[in-house]
Image (cartoon, rainbow, N blue to C red):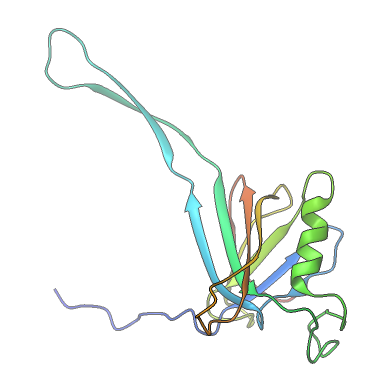
Length: 166
């Protein structure tokens, strides 16, 4: 059996965030460094009976999912207003921190593995997602690595659809 030649790379991904359905989408594409998805596992149950060595197994319901985005920590946005949705003083870190401090911590994430291009798939946490973890900047004294922030959002489901704008 031959292998596929159709591998995809995440290098051209686009990422956007907003506080809720009424909010404006803000681009994180020039700040985000990684996206990780966890959860969504289906529960299962099993029980054994005395007359057989094999268990009786049943499928349960699916668990919620977590989406974690790591992004560059900045205190000023260079190139602000150039189609990113950010102003010079409003940084992704400060914005997400405000959303985390708000009651309910609402935050929605959507991302395109192949970029926000007409017809490409977009993955969206939906409007019932909220922040479960927000990490302040951290780092090491000897490292030259850029300082990162990190946010994790919990959602009931990640929705996938072809993107046709907006």
